[in-house]
Length: 444
Image 1: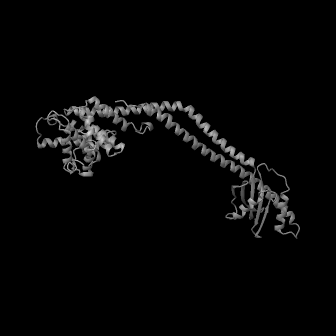
Image 2: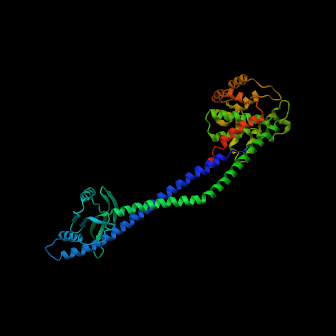
């Protein structure tokens, strides 16, 4: 059997891989954009802090000059000093202060000054009034970029200290960022995203042929391995059939019937995989039964029957040596259990019997009854169905028998009289469906 892998390989390489590259590009771009945006903000904060410190030193010097006059209060001196600051020229390429507020702790004084020449100063006043000042730590600088209707501001709150380093109050300002500064920040983020995507795409373009080649090799290897496992499954199943004087046709039919019934009850795909393996290998333990018993033409004695029943345990022992075949144990170990608990080897009852074993029991008996054997002629379809119904609740799961009745006629017409090659073709389609469905993600 060869697995059709071309479409799956194309899907994986050209669709799944491309999506993953795109996702990586987007995630990387987002991360870099955040990093660059934060770095740009820190640069702006640093500039505003340095400017604010310079202004504070100038403000302190001017305030001390005005306080030489004993008739001037601290509040008046601060007002005069702030007014004097507005006439000093300094670098305004990044922005300008449009609001000062100085709080003096010892004198419980608060001095506020707005830039009355700024046309949108009312927006700043509303923001200040709506944002109460909460001073939590005299050593912590609070800074954030605030977006108002007319532009972007840095809202800065920083502690004021005397020359000895002791806290004396707080400075609160609103620093208006120029349009060019905001645009530069935005453009820097956009350019970073662009270059990040470009780098990822260029790197992917360089690595893409290598990835395709490695992926193709991996898919080929995986498919060959799956082919080998499936071929061994069929060879082993065929060897068992020959050992039991049977044909591959029986294995093909019971597997097809079991898979169709599993589909009818909407069994999950992974369980149908296990069912297919178990159907092929249900009698694998008969390899360990002596020919004198396995091929005996007459009726078996009680001791011989007991020995024959050990083929179930022998089968479990055989498949347990293979990781890939381990999930076939439900059928191998449970296909002789009966719904009423009178089966073997464990005497399981009803739901205690694995669902795959209950499904297989119906398909095995249906095929045995409708097939010609050296020791019997085939029963008619009607007689076979009637026998299944009569054993519903004793040998078989009543629900599964009822579901099987809906598909039995179609299955009988599809499989009856087909040779091994025709049956193999039908079974291969089922195997393609359930064993190759994950190939587009290499998850099978």
